[in-house]
Length: 195
Image 1 (cartoon, rainbow, N blue to C red):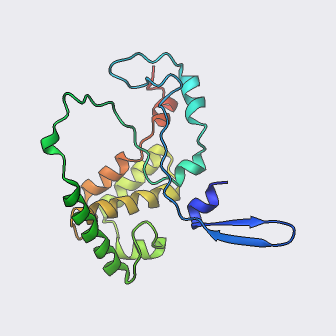
Image 2 (cartoon, helix red, strand yellow):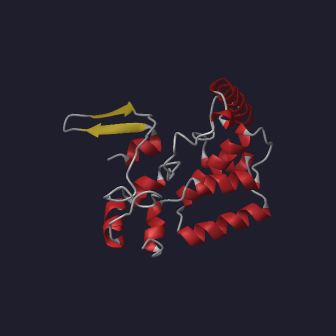
């Protein structure tokens, strides 16, 4: 049921008398434990789940839904005692970088459209990957069985990361960062890397 509004930003409700379409743009945020016990990958606790249990648990979110999510990020536990506050970027600095990145996107596309909402054709026309980057994308797509939708999500994310860094073109570092944000725990389970 979430696929249509995530893809189009609209939801259509059909009843016997009529069909109505409503705007439904939203930001989907979710949190999910890495496994049923919640300790997979923990440095402090031992995971008691079998690979089969972990796969069944992570498969509760279907592949088509995961394809429509921009960032799939595995978070590590952080010790508050060891966190270094000095290296954190202040919110006002982040806000200024985001404002500049938005203005760059508006200028690039000729209207108030962001990397997330622009059509695939316009994005690829304005933000072409070089030969090396295309080869990297093909290798990762083949290795992780990414759909065309996921590949476009990675390019959009890499373009946004480059905008935030004030880079004119998509950089290799931005693509690498975008790719690392698409890694999910389920791929490790499927390859038998989780014991």
